[in-house]
Image (cartoon, rainbow, N blue to C red; front, side, top):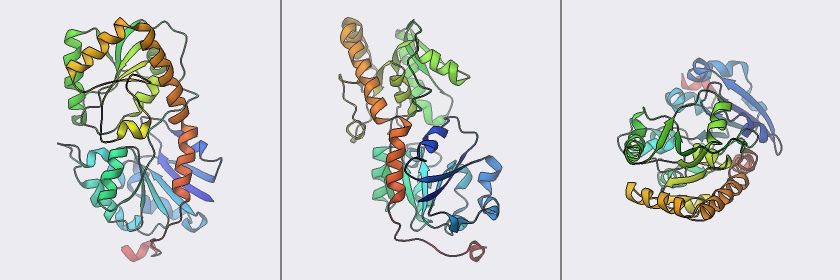
Length: 312
């Protein structure tokens, strides 16, 4: 099967290896688009013969493609890979309902969603949605030999409105515990810093799914102390409290789990080891590529064959 994958050239999370891993079960042509190309897909496809591909996968920014439904309806066997669809029903989100409205404008489109609850939300709205979780590049996210001299750490953004719950919780924790909230600027610095953190504090508050940094931290050997998402998310990911991570529901329970980890460091370390083993088996890009290939290969039953100029 020949597959065309269009992905963002400037995405913050470099998932090139994810699409490279897709090469094994399929024949994949991966192309990287800048912002201007993403905003004008009709113009970009002038140099492409879609009929040469049995499947087309778009891993592009929603904000750049959401106004291009008329052209996208002309692409047969189209799959959208989406990591941000949780914004469709997140309270206060500027994109509330926008994802479902967009997908409904694309008859026959298939969506790969990285959240279990998000996938169920899309399916309830009539979208052909399939769950494949976020992951990481196992060649990059490795446990390095640095001493873990940061007891509690978080690496990531706090400024976005979507992360207001994250910011509030982390700032409250930092008032009572020696939490270090950090930003890194290169991939190497990011991995080096994760390798220095003993307990990684995950604060995916109000996001309904686990962000990739959870699995990256676990892959680098951190003990993950994560906000429970519920609605079947943990079960779908194989995450078990006290087995391969520690879960909390609010600041009080976070402090309780942290105190337990300090009181029983040997048990806590064994949880970190099992967490690393788990995500290497479940969330590494080569594993996820197989799941994506299975979703993409399912026959399409409702596709458009209209030439693009019929919509203009």
